[in-house]
Amino acid sequence: MADLLHFEEEELGNRLEDMQVNRNLLTDLEKYPARKARWVTLRIAGVLHYGSRDEVDTYELEDAIVVANDGDGGFLILLGD
Image (cartoon, rainbow, N blue to C red; front, side):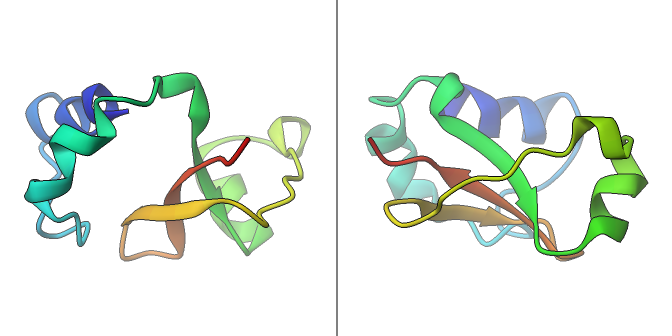
């Protein structure tokens, strides 16, 4: 999952500080594969900004942890088991 955050910063130019990511957590996040991460939003408008209704999935977020915030209603979450 840390690789995903490095990609956000290095390739897309999104500063981790702007996404409210604590750099000290990157080492811990390396333990988790990217397949456990999802960008989510609570608003359909947020989905439509990046994709289509066909790409909408619903997740049970009981054990999820918010890792980052895009400042526009999107959240990067780590899915629980």
